[in-house]
Amino acid sequence: MNGFEKKSLDEDAFGDNKALAGLKTFDAFPKTKASYTTPTRSGGQWTVLILLICTVFSWSELKTWWRGTENYHFSVEKGVSHELQLNLDIVVDMPCEALRINIQDAAGDRILAGELLTREDTSWMLWMQKRNYDTYAGHEYQTLSHEEADRLSEQEADSHVSHVLGEVRHNPRRKFPKGPRMRRGDVPDACRIYGSLEGNKVQGDFHITARGHGYRENSPHLDHGSFNFSHMITELSFGPHYPNLLNPLDKTIAESDAHYYKFQYFLSVVPTLYSRGKGALEAYTRSPEKAARYGRNTVFTNQYAATSQSGPIPESPMLVPGIFFKYNIEPILLLVSEERAGFLSLLIRVINTVSGVLVTGGWLYQITSWAGDVWGRRKNRSSEGYLTGKASSD
Image (cartoon, rainbow, N blue to C red; front, side, top):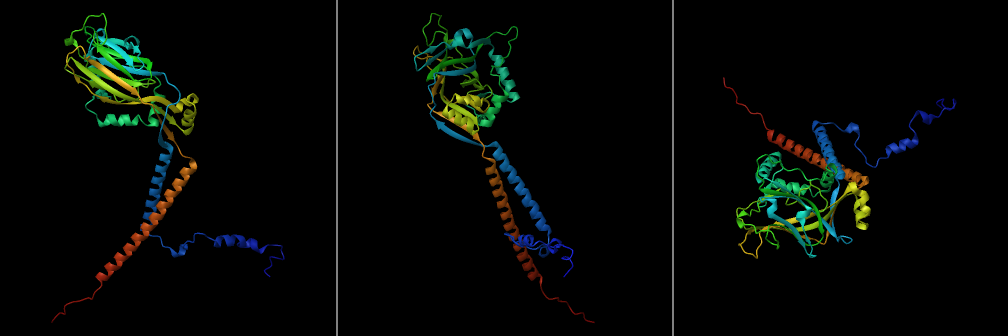
């Protein structure tokens, strides 16, 4: 009829395919025709606002997914532990030859910590100057009776997996820092005690006392008027030495004008494992030895809570002044793991977030448009009236 068949041409090739035409007419989400819509300025502003909100919420979901979530689990520590490492860096305002350092634990063992730790004669005034310098540099030493919000926030940061792993990874050195060097003519009147030692993993009492007090020895009795157990704790930790992690007694100072004075600290030590990813945590729960291959993603340490009960005591042979750290090992293991959900879970959360914003934005736009129309009609009604005027008289 139209001449296409004579030339062996298919008429359908010059028009819409019937199958494609059927797909075009089918739409699960019918939309208003473009000819029936009129773009407005307020509609464009709402579109930009909704797109901006969707971008912000999607970026927030992505950051949350990237950081992961921390999970806390308590478990009984596997195996039988025998030793516990103690790391100490303390300055006492008394000469080293006048001090005695020992550990007495629940197993009945007495450890001569003074022979295992390093002792250096120093000046208390130099360490006070170092304290003021560190305070100026942002590493503030504080008394136990005064807790600053900044210090509490630093301790809170050291309880997060990402922070702990980052500190340990970027600061692999586990050495004790050098103290201030004494100048020529300075008289040593204090003692710095620092180092790490191995003890029994049982309840114990680490104490620093004066010569001739607390234990029987052939050394001459020290005059009570020379006692001064004021001290500065730079570090006190249990387990592997991680000097960059802040513990409750780190960078604290305790001073007293009384000579016969007893400083007492009660510590509750909790073994803690920080891990990133499910693999390291599951490996440790099955076999702690297998978790060694996740070394970059696991850190085993110990946390502790500290309380202090100090004060002057009567001068009596039955009462011993000094510095006492009474620690107790809790029979639990705290597992702190940082885990990240799968990418599919992230995709579903982003889609749900964007969909919710679009639906809510559409509702708000319709409500505001309706409210604007109602307000406009009411305003027009109030402005309707009759024109009146005064007749002019000749």
